[in-house]
Structure formats: structure tokens, C-alpha cells
Amino acid sequence: MKRRVVIIGSGNVATSIALTLKDKCELVQIYSRTLTNAKALAQHVGCEAIGDLKNLALDADVYIVSVKDDAITSVVDAVPDNGALWLHTSGSTPIDVFQNKRSRYGVLYPMQSFSKSHPANMSEVHIFIEGCDSETCKEIKAIASLMTKNVHEAASAEREKLHIAAVFACNFANHMFTLSSEVLDEAGLPFDAMLPLIKTTIAKLDNMTPQESQTGPAARGDMTIIEKHLKSLHGDKRKIYKLLSHSIMDRTK
Image (cartoon, rainbow, N blue to C red; front, side):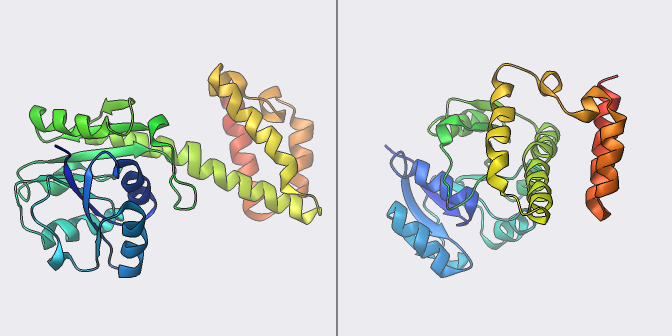
């Protein structure tokens, strides 16, 4: 029998999870404070949409809380323990957010950058799980395995390190693309020119470590080029270029 699942949230992560589970579980409800958002996702996965936690179905098997980190506690506090399995999807929120409030609980953290407009292929995603006890952890692993074969156990402290690493690898890297685009805009050049370079840089990581694949003036210790670049940069771009160049040089001595 398929598990009955309620998804609390309708954002980027909730959308990818719902779309992945819709044929593997019985999705009961999608909740969002903004009912129109809940309805939009619920229409895609064929279940009820609700905009008030007072209307939450209490007879489901699993509740996946996929909301902003600072909203998890308020969601948990608003609903009584019904004996079901409760999970959150946060990287940096500890499992203790459920302690003394739920009898069965844990974490299901998918390591990916999610966007509603570009749903992730969850079969390629690594999911990190944690359970309040060994039996619960087995159940969480079974649920995660419906989405991907890449399932790993990670305690809250380890998961926080994962989240920090993800910020460097994804959020900060993407901000570098933004700065690159701004530099190109100043020269009237297209950002499209960077796409083959970016794709090649990522592709190399299939066979090389990031340290091994590092190139550029800082990796070569070419201070003449670095100083020339710094003279043409101003404000945050100059500070970031200088800081990152020194960081690269410190690791390539």
C-alpha cells in the first residue's frame, strides 16, 4: 500500500519532492500560507490544496515540512502529534526542532539547488537523512529511496557542514557569475561567451578534484596580471577579486 503523504510547503524544494513522489505515494494535501500557491502545485500532483493548518489532514503516514527554516518551529507547534512520521528538509535546522513535540521524526535533506521553473531530476540528487531512532531512520531511508539511490545518513552537525559547502559550491559560485556578467555588461559584451567556459569547468570535476582543475593568474602566481586586473576593478568586485586571488595562491604554493 502506498504511503499517504502531506507536504507542508509549496516552494522550490516542496515542488520537486511532490512531483517526484506523486506516482510513488498517495499525496493527500499540499499546504501553503498562500492558497493560490498550494492550489498551483496540488493541481500538478492531483491532491487537495489548503491554506490553513487547521485543515491539515491528521490521518496521513508522512508529513514533509518543506518551508523556510525560521518557519519550521511554528508549523510543528501549530499541529498536534498524530503519531505519524514528521520530516523537515532543511540543511541547517537540527533534528531537535521536533524533540518533545513528535514521537517519530527526522530529516530528509536533498542536496540540490531547486527552482520551480526547473524541477530537479531527483534520481541524480544525493539525499541526506537523520532519524530519531534506528527504526525511524530505516523508514526515512525507504522514503528517500523512492526518489534516488543516493541516500546517506548524516547527523545534524554533519548536515550543517554540507549546507555550508553547498553555499560555497552553488550560491557563491552563482554570485561569481553575476559579477562576471556585470563586468561584461560594462564592456558591452554578452554573458553567453562565458557559458562554454563554465560548462567545461564543471565537466572537469568528473575526473579531477577542484584543486587539480584550478587555473588562472592566481594559480600561476602571475602578479603582473592580477595587479592589472585590480586597477580596473572598484568596490566589492576589487575586494572579492583580491581576496579570492590570495586564497587561491595560498593553496597553490
